[in-house]
Length: 294
Ligand SMILES: Nc1ncnc2c1ncn2[C@@H]1O[C@H](COP(=O)(O)OP(=O)(O)OP(=O)(O)O)[C@@H](O)[C@H]1O
Image (cartoon, rainbow, N blue to C red; front, top):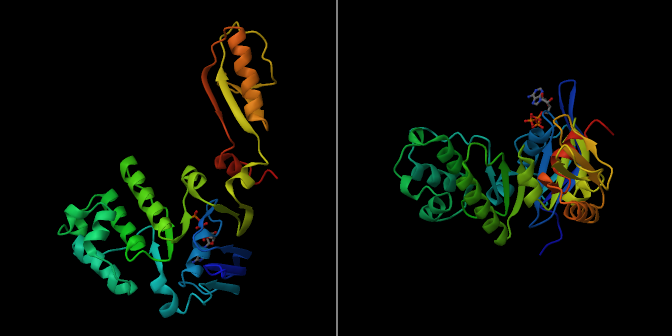
């Protein structure tokens, strides 16, 4: 295993005319890592990724992919699979022809039948792209990430428009890519998907990182929560709680296990029914909501 990062971004700046979209951004992604680049709308994620993918020149700063300038496409492109928000396959091609085209464009080799199987379109090889459903088109887009098991895979909003079975199937396939050693870079607005899978997260806001780190590093500065409903005649609670507008009680805590134990013990001793009880770690959503508050 090489210690050279797969992606190395150093003080990247991107401007559109007078507008400074990405400001002095630095980060690295190690081989085999699952990195999620997340952020608010207009934060600069797409601009950053386009630069890493070799589609856009940096205004200043240095970007290296596998140790090379990503604009050196012959060296870098065959090693990366990019699932865009829309791949733009020609509607007149069949699914099989589209997958074959990926091979020609990327100069990677694979078996068409294998790729069709991975994206669950084996029965649609002779169907025209124009006749696919939205979810099936998205699965065909995913073939660009899977074909030839690239060393580096970009997934841009990969599960948009997919039903739950297709989502699970896609994430299983991503797990297999990881087992093969692929490095994954994900952008998504489905924060739970990133929270469950990413080794590290870069959370962008207005062109810079608001936070960067593992999920627990990002969430540890915010409390976990316990929510529940109480009968009208309930005794005073054993812990400080606030009342949310819809009547739910909320306990915010940095000692989730201990406080949950106290609350459940109290409910048991006094035969109190804690309705709709929910307890959980801080979610990335909460970190997002805190942007601009600190
Ligand atoms: N070609 C362009 N010309 C001028 N401004 C642009 C151009 N492309 C992007 N921008 C601006 O740069 C900023 C960053 O855009 P970018 O698309 O990188 O954000 P993003 O994080 O991907 O946003 P979203 O989550 O909304 O897709 C935005 O304010 C956007 O309006």
